[in-house]
Length: 307
Image (cartoon, rainbow, N blue to C red; front, side, top):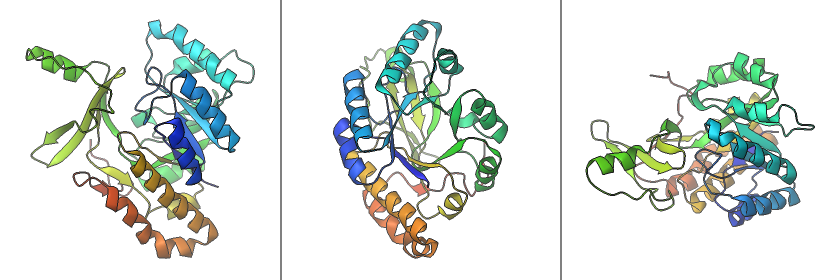
């Protein structure tokens, strides 16, 4: 059965998302993971994993940062901690994580997540041979490409079905540097305070969320992916996991999206015709909380990618 994977903002938020039917959770801390909905340092991480396991759910820890030499000792210590806490999966993009796991007995399974480069089944199987049990597909793929990768891969396949995506990341603090160049002082705040900072493309009337954290500068898509009306082929192909990405979203928004996608998956599993009849109504509660300046679309699932 397809897993519903969500991104909570706090330990308390996890409790609510469990009630709403989430199967698995992406958690972690900014120091090691990219673009997390919430910050889970060691005390919160311990509490969160304990809670998640108490309810028979799964905890996936984001260790998908881009690591330099000076990070390796901390990375290895963090991986030690995750083994102590019995995390269910480690999400990675940097092969340094694989090397840090290489000589462990009973290592935590890996989910390979390298953003835009996860585009074919050869890559998925390559990392599958090196400890990965799952590949997180790029968001720029068509439905035909997704289905072919699923058919020819020896690992689980994860697809993002809802939320914004990252268009650009720089390790540099581009915003801070820009303001300093103008002789202005800009304190880089946690994104909880500046989650409405936008780049405005007047020509296309697009607004791109932008924020800085310890991993640099992130520019996000102007639209949100929303596939709640288009899940049939993905479910028929038995895609292993649907992810709702809640970065820069409110708890209320993540809750509503989780509840609606839970209903969509359950309806299809009960009877595909029920899903077909009711899928349009499932969209309405999400539309009610969607920001006016953020249109929803199907990403690149049914259109050609333009670079």
